[in-house]
Amino acid sequence: MRTLLANHPLVTHKLTLLRDAATDTATFRRLADELVTLLAYEATREIRLTVVTVQTPVGAAVGAKLADPMPLIVPVLRAGIGMLDGMTRLLPQAGVGFVGMVRDEESLVASTYANRLPVDLTGREVFVLDPMLATGGTLITVIGMLRDRGAAAVTAICLLAAPEGLTRVDEAFPGDFVRVVTGAVDDRLNDKGYIVPGLGDAGDRLFGEI
Image (tube, rainbow, N blue to C red; front, side, top):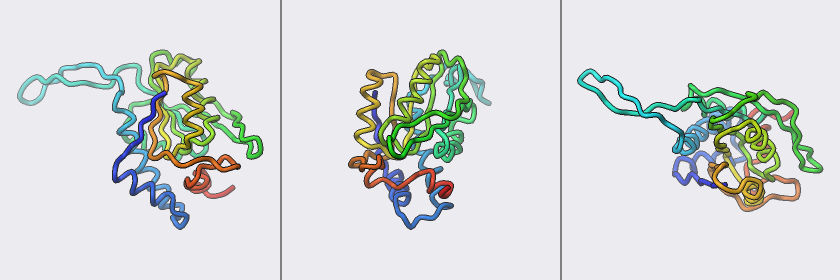
């Protein structure tokens, strides 16, 4: 696994506002959307292209377009859905699949309750959207599903990550198949599996408490 820390002043600025407990839901959604677009810019730096020639008003120009098959974007429900618009803003041509995961708050083990993924992902690059990489259990499960369907590469985009989660994902997927792009790597996990200092429960802050 490779890790890319998006070290940019705007990322730091928006992430600081997201962390603030005083930030209201509407502002949190807007900031998360903006932050995802910044992270997506870094996450797509290695996206596959094909060389093409186009005719400009004054001559021929050699350029590049996204290669087929088109990438797939997979938000992890529910919190990942709050990241979808920010990602599709940069990749409107991409397909979208969904995986629903819920974590048992006592065992901290995540289980799948929804799966809307293509059966065959052979040759496709996949971008997984999950705000918090905490224990790593959710991400490992989703990446395993994508690998089993033949995905060519998986890039996870996370607003925040914990060292423990990054270590677990790296152990599960050594090599270059997986890349994690995040806005920050925080200090640790607490005994409830939350990232410290983190920003709280991303789903609750995006959509309100259930």
